[in-house]
Amino acid sequence: RHNHRVQILTKQGAFLSEHHDFGRSSGLAIDRNDVIYTADSESTERSHPGWLKGIRIGSLRDGKVTMFIAPHKTDAPDGAMGEGIAIDAAGNIYTAEANLRGVTKYVKN
Image (tube, rainbow, N blue to C red; front, side, top):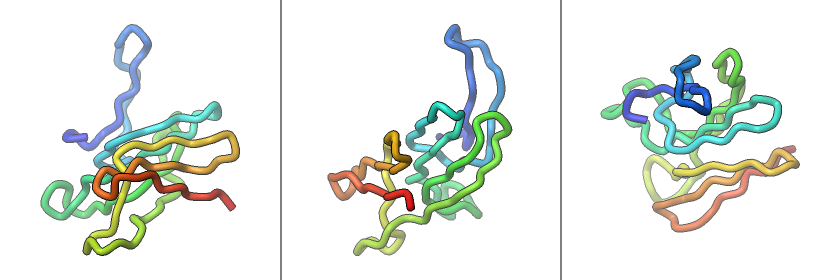
């Protein structure tokens, strides 16, 4: 996450590509349709100027982000965003919330 990119490698570790539009990713998940889901809990004006914390969803093939989900509201001024991320077969998203010590579920409509 410190380099603000997602790198795609083969199972043997050979470089294939990298994408720079998914923020300062703390966690990521990829579904069977090559859709990538990233949780960015680290972007701030100090660590990644011009970027917001949140979930970015897009294509693993072309690296284009198609959806952004902002942090949910908490007592913290910047809201809360998960460190880890997972998706289920129905398309619901789960984030592991380190600061809140729990899991947040985002339901697909």
